[in-house]
Length: 278
Image 1 (tube, rainbow, N blue to C red):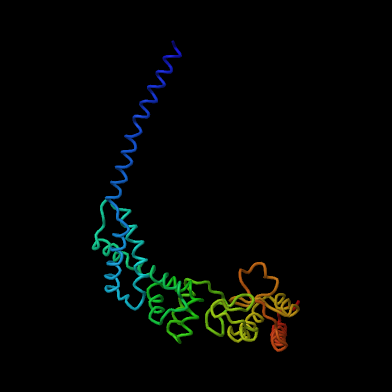
Image 2: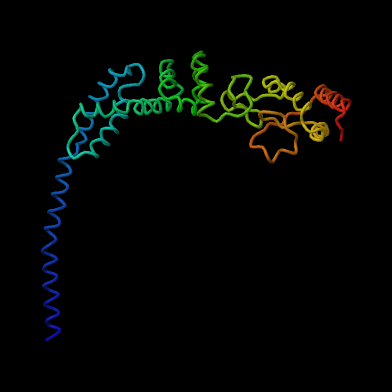
């Protein structure tokens, strides 16, 4: 009897469960219909994106900056994001108002899109990127420089040089070819790609004056070390080889016969003035 009661009880339980399934399905279907009513169809998103892009292009003077279809792509993502965050369908007016409230963010998004086709950028597009997205321009200076140079846009290059120092990856050594502080330890410029020789670098940084400053004021032991080694490590100043492990960045520059004689003459003068020599 007990077994019979358990079977009937199980059967009743299964019946309740089965009977409740259609109700849950109806609830999910209703939820989907409700969500669909609140959201936008693909056709509505496309229509709003194209209308908003056209209006924004006129307001912000973007007609000659970015192709309409590319602008629509940017706006489309914004329309979808706005629609997903609202309980009701957004209007064209509300979408434009939302974008204009974050105008600088929108312009930076356009600048990022333009850089994807850097080889075909026009002068107006380069100016747009520099003027509206300086941090993006600074980080992308190696790419934008090549295009600006090809167009002879010196004013754009000047701006890129400034923003490279703030937002890019500047080094202590200035390239004598392009004027960017972008020379790497292997004497290659990160911006213009020039492979430099030591003499070029020395002339660009005023090496003779830097070496003289070092020889006149550094500990005589360090000056003697440089003479023995025959080279120095240069960042913002001249350093002896023994400081290699304490420097984040440096380039090795070897001393010419004339430069060594300059250092020796300074050491002799310091000794003559009473300073002890190693």
